[in-house]
Image (cartoon, rainbow, N blue to C red):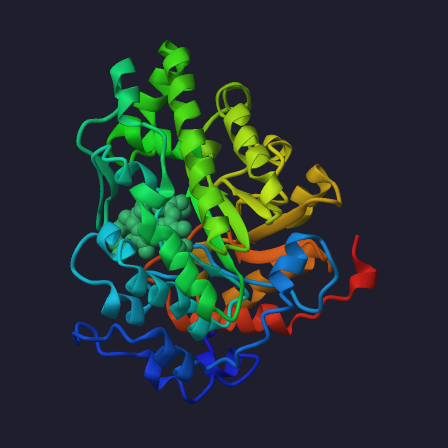
Length: 393
Ligand code: CP3
């Protein structure tokens, strides 16, 4: 297929005034204030009272499909690289002003319907001094991985206001100036457990699988402590003003359904149950949902993230019409020519078939090499697609 020019493929011409969004990299004092960023925003600041994102999460009628991207803040944005600083990401997260600016960058660049707090799933265990760091280009690494009963003592109860007060402070600062709802989040207990047990990112999760098989009692205690930490963390973010929360259990899809049901499900179910009284929509995300989609829905979230490996219409058939779905464009599609992007976005929307319970997203996080122009284009495509509520099925 001949590749036409980017502009000819865009539904609408790109806004001409995007120059402010391309700060020269490494140019020093670029930590612009939130006020400055708002003044420069390419998007009108809508009233906070109505939100297509929150309406979709509740399955209520609304006029356009809301969209946000997992990892929308991050290395794909030059303005992120400009203010991120030299330390680890955990240093940036612990600086509320910087973290608030970073949280809002994708909102102003893309016009997405929600902001996700700039933080990391490893923040609570890091704040408890478990000895976790996040190495750029690698991911979470742990000094002394979890492998015995005495390691449980290294996971005392998490007190967000004392252990990591900067998280709630960032939420408050963002909520004060965000034109859209703010999503709080935490790691699912299996995914956190897998990092603590493996000691470094691992696809096969061999040590974790071995612990689950050889000492299920110890694994249960580990999961239980992590579930308590997650509940405290999410409750504190909602108290600070988060309008929705997402539980990221990225690697849980690596388990077979029986193992998931016995050793993970009860903990995720408890977490979602224990935050139900906050009243905010609860989104449950796993990276590859093929083997556990129904179990994931049964943990009791308001919104289920669907991996890109499962077509949305198939997910809807499996889960019934009442659950709200989030997803599910393959993030790698965003590296393709715009014709391919256009077709893939149209396919996700067509498979949703005008159902009001859909939040558009990628099936996993934005890849760092993604061109931000492509994500802006995806937002325009999704927003241009009108929902006709009478066609919902
Ligand atoms: O924009 C957002 O989505 C909000 C911020 C966010 C980050 N991490 C910032 C971050 C969120 C929601 C996360 C969640 C997270 N962190 C998950 C679950 C989602 C997923 O991607 O599966 C996981 C597994 C982690 C653990 C983690 N943190 C990994 C694997 C990495 C990548 C390491 C690397 O450098 O490639 C991180 C680092 C991290 N967290 C970055 C960002 C923006 C990388 C950029 C940096 O170091 O500045």
